[in-house]
Image 1 (cartoon, rainbow, N blue to C red):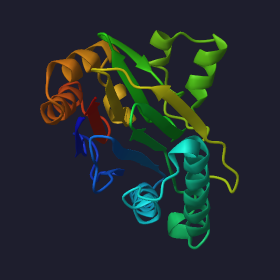
Image 2 (spheres, one colour):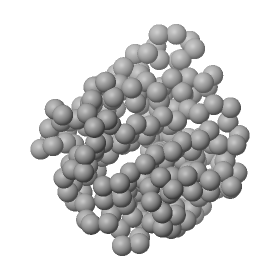
Image 3 (cartoon, rainbow, N blue to C red):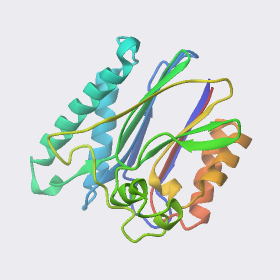
Length: 241
């Protein structure tokens, strides 16, 4: 397993409100990856995303006590604890009121991948040259696409494409999506924030990720997003199995 991560504030934002983490002590048979995109004005999105990732860092550690037999249940419980912490923090002062963050985490244990997901950051799989989105966008536009009201192509340029319907810290209650699948040889996984997917097509993402080692792929994907305008913070993790 090879992996790398990269982040950039983009061309139009003053600060980077994205956060990410690759757990310490990864091995060829176990690793975990986290990505978060902060939401809210007055820079409080940066606080929310950083807090979520740091909570997972402190709680999950190196994954030594992680129960792989109930990976989905454990990740859901972890996300609920993160949500409670961020939500409580948001009630503490007017400066951080309303803050939240997307959160996507993928755990690779042996030949299986389990992921937990809230928001509109994405987890992709590239298998046999074809790219597929494993997560659903928890957004107003994402719901319209799932209902068939909008096509995916129409959604790309919709003025409300960034309206989130589910986020860490926005409510005391949280619904978490869990994704589980078996890993095949040469699979490539990508975790990314919408600063990448709003700027770069899925086909180009697949071509870049498949054609380079993870570190170079991350740099090239960020470069591609900035070349198209760099309208948001860009964070990407590339994992080659």
